[in-house]
Image 1 (tube, helix red, strand yellow):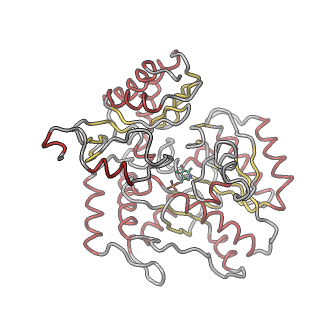
Image 2 (tube, protein in one colour; image 1 turned 120 degrees about the vertical axis):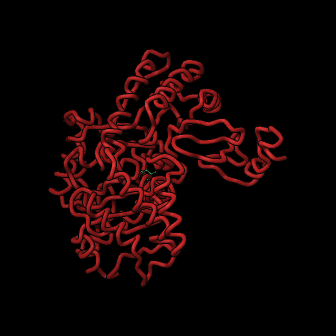
Image 3 (tube, helix red, strand yellow; image 1 turned 90 degrees about the horizontal axis):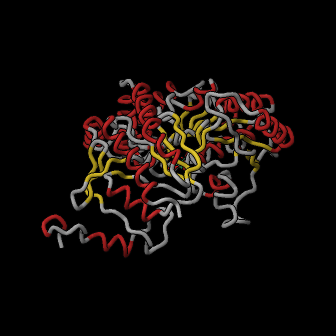
Amino acid sequence: MTDQASGSATPAWLALDHRHAWHPYARAPAADPVYPVVAARGVRLVLADGRELIDGMSSWWSAIHGYNHPVLNRALADQAGRMAHVMFGGLAHQPAAELCALLARITPGRLERVFLCDSGSVAVEVAIKIALQYQLGRGERGRTRLLSLAGGYHGDTFMAMSVCDPVTGMHRLFDGVLPQQLFAARPGGAPDGPARTEDVDAFAALLAEHAPRLAAVILEPVVQGAGGMHFYSAAFLARVRELCTAHDVLLIADEIATGFGRTGRLFACEHAGIAPDILCLGKALTGGYLSLAATLASDHIAATLGAGEAGALMHGPTFMGNPLAAAVALASTRLLLAQPWSREVARIGAALRTGLEPARTLPGVRDVRVFGAIGVIETERPVAMRAITEAFVERGVWLRPFGRLVYTMPPFITGDADLAQLTGAMVEALASCPPP
Ligand SMILES: *Cc1c(COP(=O)(O)O)cnc(C)c1O
């Protein structure tokens, strides 16, 4: 029964997982195998059979410092020794206070007010609620809709789903349930190149037409993540900022994937030199240790909202501001800022560019692109998930493609040899099992 003792590759509990657990975006029981992982350290996941895989996913953008980091472990253990949790209603504690202050200081613009919540999707819900309550606070009762970009991803809760891409999102599935939002065409252009005129014109026309009914524009700055691993011109984002201001519509930047250095700037808004009115953070906030997210807004927005009928922001999750999560987020963010992270991100970007280049000539490959520490191979047709996952694991790497996208955003501590193995495995696996 026991795994390593009997030399078996399969621990007994894996049957329990198969029988009872629901995995993300999976049917139950799961159709594809899942890999039993028993430990993680540095950039490696340790499987039950002892095999070690270089993690190219950072557990979905989050584990930027790698796993089992002594500094983060200590922050968590120290906090657990004091208090694991207390309610945030009517109580305050040091880890949350210091985290809020740090986030206010390092984020673009003057976003002085921080709402801590449990997950990215909830941070998006809170951002939208802040925008709606802000409009109510200044007597704009008709400003209830949102304008987003095609190809975006903002989370899986219902209001967040409503602003995800209307085709690849779950709009058809939940037709009649999701609020109808507005979508501008997905912008193009290189991140550091000029905005495409047609993108700006189309966005400006849509905004001009609907501004009186819009509470906010919501978008992922420069990098659209789960909606297609797509990069677009930062100059377009700069124009969006100007247009939102001109039309008196709030701008919500969803930096849940891009925040904390991943794109080469601490926050992707910095590529455009802009500040949003409302900002969402998550994923790498705790260095991948615990679920925590944050929504930031200006004092002006907070004050206007507070002047409304409700008199308060109407949100308050049970585990809001959890001290363990806040303590590890504080430690992770301080650790990041104390390091030459931008040099590491540039080093990883260069290694991804070199390592993924050979994929360009593979049959069935449409595009290879790298920005910051994000590397993407886009194929013509969806990859065969099971076969390609096996091919990755055989080559000692962990990657989780979706659809036509094989991509990596490794931990910032990934060394050059590991990056070479990672990119080599991506190219070889695609060559050995081309998209069917
Ligand atoms: C992952 C993600 C979310 C949702 O965050 P969860 O923690 O999964 O709820 C929202 N927006 C963006 C841009 C994301 O990448």
